[in-house]
Length: 140
Image 1: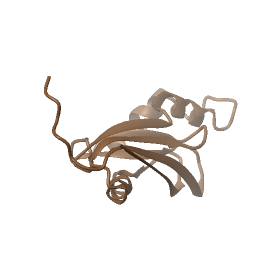
Image 2 (image 1 turned 180 degrees about the vertical axis):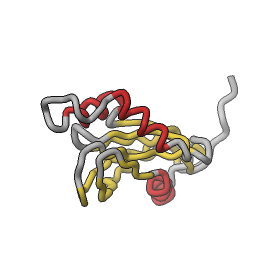
Image 3 (image 1 turned 60 degrees about the horizontal axis):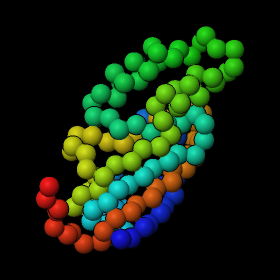
Image 4 (image 1 turned 30 degrees about the horizontal axis):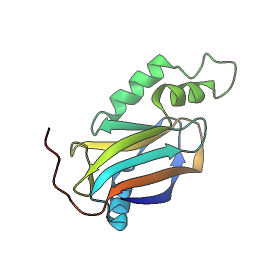
């Protein structure tokens, strides 16, 4: 078993913009030489979020989230950003198989920038843990 960690930095702007991460994560899986295991991601801060989403549904997802948590009804200026981050999550875990994320090809892991910021750096902590060679699967 091998463990590998990396901090991925992403420049963001917002509010409510999605930034795809799958390509960066799979590049790190290749560098680490992990063939089977798990990728654990956690983003720093109280307002961003990480979401696994089918490509092509980004606008629909953002529209639905902003209907659930509107920007304008809160006394605190970015309360909506904290609530959205809490509802969605600041971490996720995805299995690794054959040195790729075990997701359908048309899915991605997105960083959601909820705040009204420009040229903001978000830090995502990536932990990869797994086997460095493909071993036979255990049968039930």
